[in-house]
Length: 236
Image (cartoon, rainbow, N blue to C red; front, side, top):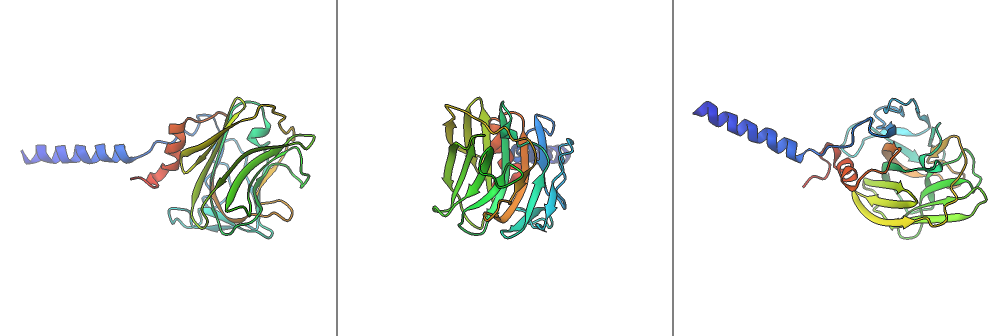
């Protein structure tokens, strides 16, 4: 009887653990690049798109693990990635990352071309406008398409997700959909080449970044919520 009771308790423990553990999308399920920043900027998707670190220093991640995120000082630090940015390409896609930014300012978190020319690129940024986080792109001719703007918190880890399905972009903050935007007259950047985390002349990003994921499909709301809770982060 005691042995039977022990098995019942043990089964309940395993069931509870499985229930509380979020399942993120499988590594190969459309994942084109993954940068967990566990001591380096290697692409752990297996696709070989390794980042190159310029000055950024390793710091604790949101779980308190040492050397598991990068901090950029807003002066000269940046990380360079070799492949064409996902939203420059036609078709569906998803882009996710964690940020912990220090101050309100106009800073480019991600700038998706290899120089400072303000056209034919995406810009994922913060501004002075009440801690605003924003996304826009400029066409090859320089026409601006503003996609999103939303307030985010300072000095805390925030999970940002951007998906595109057809011509509709969706913004997620901490696993929850915030808004949709349909680009009625798309004129996507045609630039092919490297892009940056933190680097744009006079608009360098000051803060920490971690767990960049890029998919060649639009993830579902449930998949995105699972990514946010990966590692049992913020589980209630």
